[in-house]
Amino acid sequence: MALKDLDIGEYIEFNVKKRFAIITLNRVHRSNAFTVEQLRFLKKAIEYCQNSVKIRGLILTANGTTFSTGMDLDFINGSDHTAVKDLERTAAEICMLLFNGKPAIAAINGRCLGEGVVFLLCCDYRIGVKDSYFQYPEIFSGIFPGTGCIVLMTRIIGIPWTKKMLMLAEKISSEKALEIGLIDQIVESQEDLMEAALDKAKFLFPKNQIVLNAIEAHHEEIRPISPYAAVVEIADSISGSRPGARRETIEAYIKRLNTLEELAASFDGVERVFAIQAGREIRVMVHPESISDLEAESLAREVAKRIEKETQYPGQIKVTVIREKRVVETAK
Image 1 (cartoon, rainbow, N blue to C red):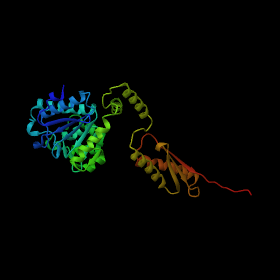
Image 2 (image 1 turned 120 degrees about the vertical axis):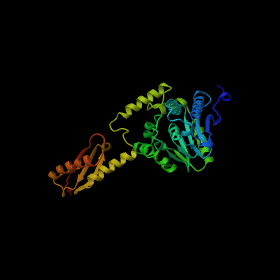
Image 3 (image 1 turned 90 degrees about the vertical axis):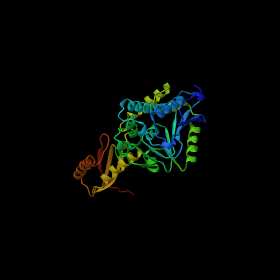
Image 4 (image 1 turned 180 degrees about the vertical axis):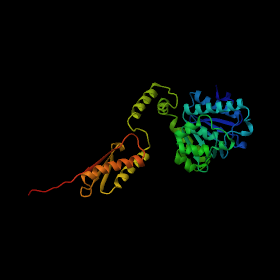
């Protein structure tokens, strides 16, 4: 299909720059809220991007000062279950196209609510203006968050923040969104927003699509398009099978080691503590004048009990108490 033949309605703008399609929501008079018809047109625009060999990725953005306020409830009859199912199906298909397809950049130009949050989560890179905020207010209307967004949201921002957004409808500022991983970059103004998005597009469009797909597909989150993706996935699985691998972030890992060392060091008579073997063993050096051999045995048991009671850790932790007294004399 030629671009001139693409029918995407009056509320979506479509153009191509640097081999990236720019899809712009333009229902400004309703804060870019979605109707079922507009969702169908948005799906058609994204499908065009995925099927065109001339397009290497897409930027999803909006006109005005609002990215989207989600579904336009004035245009949805909640008692019409067929219509609601059609809406959810179409929204879910858009999510799959964004998540499984070519590189997608979300350029968030202002407040972003409901389905707007869902769609940006499915993009590979998310940029927001400084005064943007994010909220999922469906709880006020008694609407269950559909399209499978709950699982994806927990992977990106974690379970605690997912609960805050979905159960408590917590409004999240751009600064907090950057901190928790909901967005990847903040810019000052609308002009900076599109410039930043196009800079990312400029970086991505000459890159090998097979390599990009292998990077995205190695956790089975999108469909692989080459054997290389399968090889990377196998290597990743082998690496991930190592004891303790990838069970925590580097910050949590360092914090856990520090906690273990501080806990053991809090006992009387302890001189130094070392957490080794990736935190699977701690070695406690004691003052031989303060701790006897019998007391060293008791200390090892007490340290182990406190670790079990006060900390969380994968597998087992070995506690080794070392009581060493050296006497040195020099023959002259």
